[in-house]
Amino acid sequence: MDTFETRLRDRLVRLEAAAPVRDVRPRPSRSRRGLRTTFAIAAALLLATFAVGLAIGRFVDPNEPVGHPGFENPGQPFYGAGLRCMTPPEAHRTIVERGFTVTWQIEDRDPAGAGTTSLSTEPPPSGVVEDGFVQGNKAHVVVSVGSGAIPYSGCD
Amino acid sequence: MQLAAVEPLPADILEADLLAAYPGLVRRLALVLRDEVEAEDVAQSAFARAIESRDRFRGGDARAWLFTIGLRLAFNELRRRRRARAASPDALPTWAIRSDPDLWSALAELEAQPRAALLLSVIDGYTHDEIAAMLDVRPGTVSSWLSRTKERLRVALRED
Image (tube, one colour):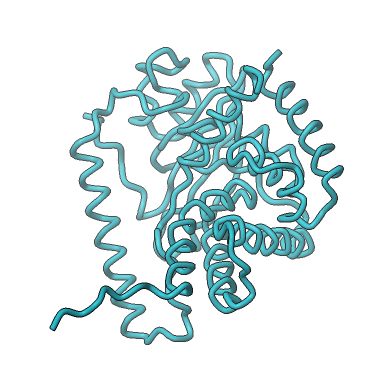
């Protein structure tokens, strides 16, 4: 295996390992599950998600780099810019002023919404900047909107 | 009275092997389908089908058997999706952004079957013949796919 293949294998393994798996065991088929059980599982999952969210908020150092180029990681173009503490329009201005074009990936986190994802070159008027990365002169920014969007805990 | 240890039945062993392979199948399908929610749904169906048709399993690599069922269901799902809507949005999941967005985008340029073949070859080390059997194509097709996909990725990832 040449060097390229070795590097490719390492990158593919890391990317695949990053893919989330909600249930490590297959769920029983829905038709065999009672309504009460379904609600109980949904409530347990909701509680678990909330607990993990709290734990991450509490224990993760906001300045610690997480894997491949989050655009605010050390060494990345927006290190120290504080984009995650800005409104989307403020973040948009900051990014454009530095010579980048922006694609906004808008994640609807409203429980009443369908959890949809959409892409736009314009920022939403409000929301929480979650993450992003830079390729060349293009920035790709993920922003969550709706009542389920949780503000970044590292902002004053 | 001392009871003899109960040996698990072969069916139980198969189910245990399938359960062990299940999370890996979900992750693999997330790369093939490029949608982790659909990946879980398809993996669920694949697991259920494997259990239903366990009598047809002739021994050997249970993981490969489950992956074969899962990948074929995934290709059906992609065909259905292609009919249902013109093109999937070019959105990047957060987990891919945090891991390797360049590679995720480069993989998007490949067709699903060559992409699956690449993963089976590069990550799992299956031979061309084994991949051909899993994807129900000729070994020569697999060789051609692998050669082209690697070259495309080498260019896309600027690896010279």
